Length: 123
View 1 (spheres, rainbow, N blue to C red):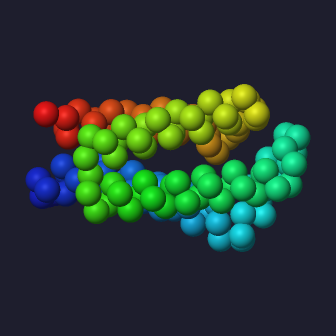
View 2 (view 1 turned 135 degrees about the horizontal axis):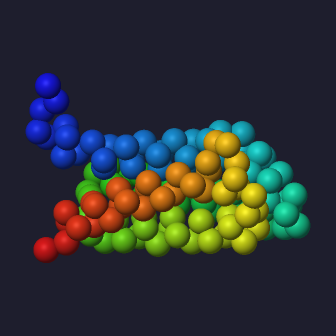
View 3 (view 1 turned 90 degrees about the vertical axis):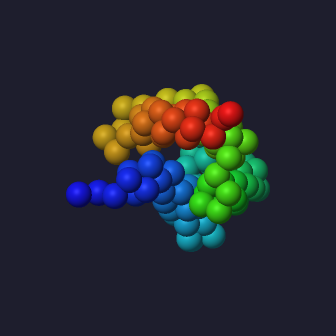
């Protein structure tokens, strides 16, 4: 049987792992893979690499924030960041919605977890 604290913190732990894992995946090769993807949609190499690093550091910061000090503000920033990334992904690479791995489709579940966390931390 799962203990009550684990059930309550499970969604937050999943979100922390998503953000920290995304940061690691984005930056592990110095951002080269993400840079190539963004260059394929027409961004210059400098802008593409800057966006990959900015996104990776954003993900790292959100993952640490949610891990160490979850708050309504943290969940709001995470939600807005996820919506911005989803909008950019949709504009630049709409085919990602049909990708079998679901890189954008997964954001629907992430949004639900973020809204749940926001509700829990809003007085």
